[in-house]
Length: 367
Image (cartoon, rainbow, N blue to C red; front, top):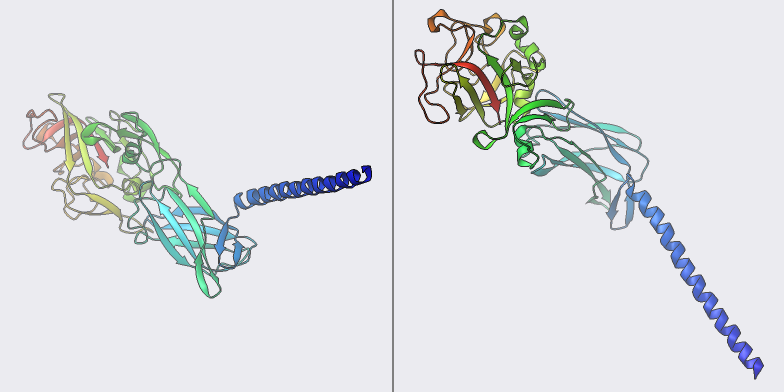
């Protein structure tokens, strides 16, 4: 009787030991898979295909831009199997996104730079985030993998971007990244977040009696890259003019305080968009679309930057419309901004000399 009981106990012990071994094996498999899964998620991503998983080591090395609005994305590829046929670039401006497809023969351990042109990015105002996904040939068919790398800008490209993202804290100084993931550094600008819906980026301030310093009369190519002063509503300031069109704008505004009545004026241009420069290698003027009867940059009858605001004529005597600085005894003005507005923001009439209102200061904004 005892012998039979001992056999039953030994059989039961064997079953228990077997079950314990099975459980330990499952735990071990789980631990191993957890380690492998973490490795897969750590930067070298995967593309799933019909015949298993092909691992690719693709990385965004650098993103930079030029004056024509082209973005250049340099990718590197590490060790990893797969017949890479195409890269899908998923680009976003923070609101909208689109996929730009670029064919490639990038091989293992190779690097390649891809160009995303303005026509590629027709629905994107600037690149705030970019991701890449590989397209490989598997079994004679192209298969799109999952995203393998991303880069993101931590700043909006304009005051309107800050406002629309809900990060506005009112009028004041903000940091923006004018070309998103491009090569330009971040910079500080003044934002008007209250007038006419807000989101206005200050690009220039001129004031009555401003000294005709030589830095204001440099050639256009110098003004493109030179910021004068610091962002201010009350002190002379001009943002480097390349940013005037890098900050993708659809509207311009001229705001000021009048000389005689100390009333705020606001003149919003209905159709003026700076699109670039005439020559990247040797820029001499702006190009733009639309029409504005009193042009943002003074009397631009040809639609370009002209002698009214360039060279020694910056402090000129024959400016009209919106005058950056008007120096003429005809208006009894002393390097004084002028503006042909009729009423102030509060709707009241303003005192004019001839057909223009003399100003203590002129602030130019874009949005």
